[in-house]
Length: 97
Image (cartoon, rainbow, N blue to C red; front, side, top):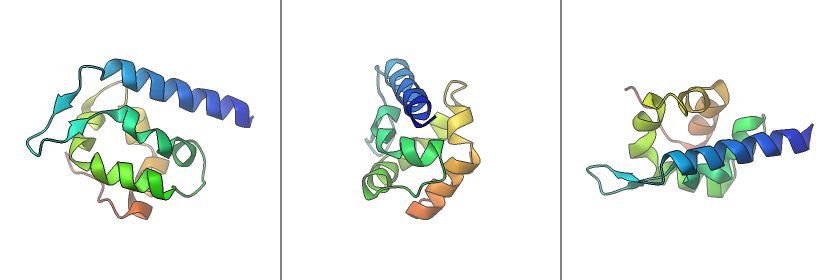
């Protein structure tokens, strides 16, 4: 079961990297790349707490979250209850887009 979850998480990250390989930029000059959130995969796919690496990456990608929510390929992951829990645990306010 854990191998399956890891495989699914890896596929999600790989898909996100492919979709965003063009990398968009926000006004704050943050490079939006959902692949940067790979350290958050274990916390997003289970009830495990996010790592410090996950929280660090999530804070860096915070200006990009609305764009990820609006992307049909990523919305289900960013909008999930686990994603909201991870954001809260990391002290990142969940965006109101």
